[in-house]
Image (cartoon, rainbow, N blue to C red; front, side, top):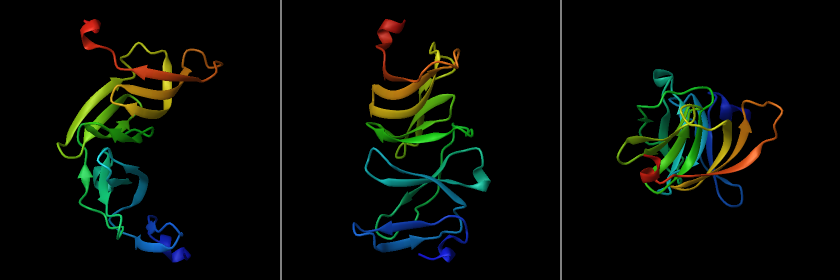
Length: 167
């Protein structure tokens, strides 16, 4: 690789198991690749910055053979913050997006956004980070008590409640 590989600020390499470059993509329409993620369906997506959609998540499916990006997928219904993280999906949620306020599930096929949990409107006294989506009903994460800044982080397992018991 040479320095000219990165002249537009974003570059994607597809390498084989021996580290040999199979393909290189320097698509100038992609300003900055933010994350690479696998979907629940097993596809590979890039989340990238798109100045025309500055406040929305933008993804493109990546062809694993040639590194080319598919059509841009702009996800409406989620406004980005500086704290946005994306996680691999499970079940009907292709991916999960955490904007620091809520955790959402998104399905690429149906184009539906579903709020999984609203961190602000919940009765949690922790702020959460480093989520691991175990299955559709279970999330492992690190929690910090935001009321006590001297507290130690805790490993938490969040389990979906039975909706009938919540009424």
